[in-house]
Image (cartoon, rainbow, N blue to C red; front, side):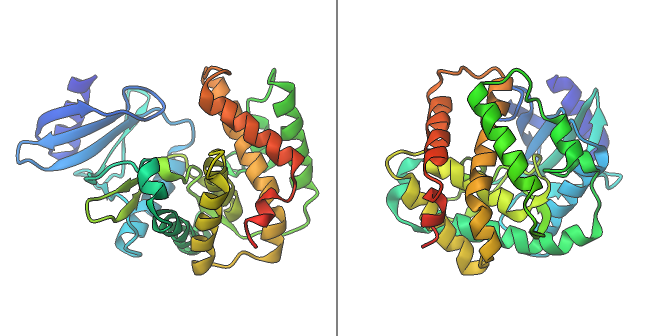
Length: 310
């Protein structure tokens, strides 16, 4: 595998590899690499299986570079190939190269040391939304890649799932079908949380891992961020409240978005659990159990999320 990647990097990017090191992360264990060239430049190489159209991936990577170049958003920059391609298709995978960011994934101590980290994360999600609302006017995604459309629902693997999860799926689906509100939509990150951020030595936060991005309503992104924070039983509500304060300092939620936010948290949490279980995660794994506990809490307390906005 590594020899194949090295060949692509030389032929398509003119990059001479001194060292290629497999990194943790990714859907598969052999997707992400740290590249060090002979002239000691560092890059991240992703060699991923991709289940959407090439046009979809291209739109995401273009947006990542627009964020980086035009909006000065803290994220990696995609490196173009010799032929100015954003990615190379090879062996049923897509390879792309991006700038390397020296830093660490934030741990509990960093997140809870003060409110600034989560406040900044909330602000960065709002800034993403502002940039995406302009960019998304010029692109079109297939209906099956647009979250909450009928074709999107038909693609979801929800057969033979836990009855409690199924009841949540049905409840959310009916809620969204009957929701007569035209929410603002565009390209969302779709996995925006602290594990997809990096903090540098000078305490600057960078957002990474854009490949799960999709077309949806913007508060769906907020639903993902909030459920990841609310899973923490000891400090989750404070974390989520701080994140929302950072978000709304940049962009105020509409009354309709506030009313629907609880259901979007419930929806994104439910679909995340289903995806993890479909990927063979153990039902008794502590993270999965924490997700189930939060989902039950959301079902029993319909004002939980709205109270965070007060």
